[in-house]
Length: 345
Image (cartoon, rainbow, N blue to C red; front, side, top):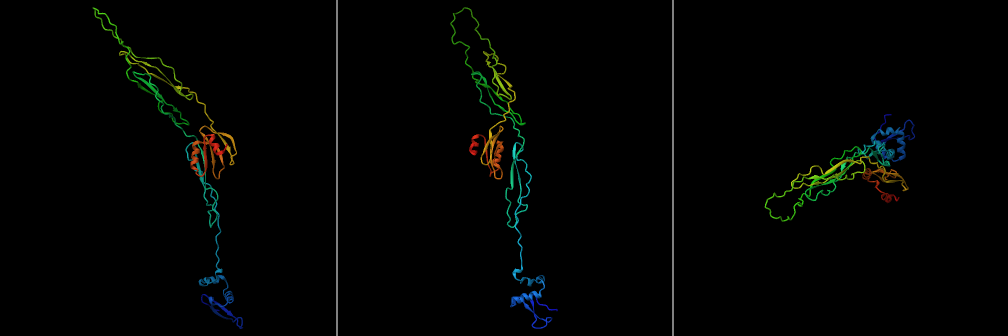
């Protein structure tokens, strides 16, 4: 009882032939123990538990390294989160694209765990109503010939209105332009004779002869020209000629051009068919079973993670997809020659 050793020492006891209840005990430095067996025996008998030894900081640090154990956390493979909602369409009309994303965070890879396999984003086509297209005027045509070779005439030129579609604004401006002045040089005077007969002298004097004035007048209207359009409304024209005044007569009055602004007003038949487009699998086995609408083309698309496809699509949307998917093979074919080049059909 009341036997204590300093920190870092152990109690060593031996019977030495004496009675068991009177052992001889002494303190020894743990590092100076000459016998490993003796040290282990003394440690086991003097220290009732591992917890008791650990109460001494110095003693704990001098225990063999095998007594200290470490636990390594296991690796965790990454997992995908849920897809986000599709983004708004990139176009307000016609067709555009939408994207959605996901992250490798459910859970995130840890302790050399594997990252997620697959794509972290997707793109799809979004179809909307057609964009309105305003009507517009074509370029002016060439001026027509002058209506007179001298003494002033007129000439005309025309242009065409390309009608609006899908609620676009109508054309602005005229379809006919008239130049009221051309070939303004004077015409040769053919009214006087170059020679006059010689008259015998007369005993009576007479007043010299004088031309009375002649006013200008309009000729009859010519026939109507052909209508500028075969359907959907066009225009047609007719003309007449001014016969110039003579000897100071009055000028012509009235128009030289008459315009009928409405002809062939029946609706044009709608054209709904365009180029043929095949359906093909990834082995380029194709079946000609599609006909595109007017304004659409046949697109060939090969994109990792998506089925190989050939189908009809708006020409503008095909170009948008081609430019927005740099790692995707997209071909926008407008004729069979293009399809033959890439599909061998």
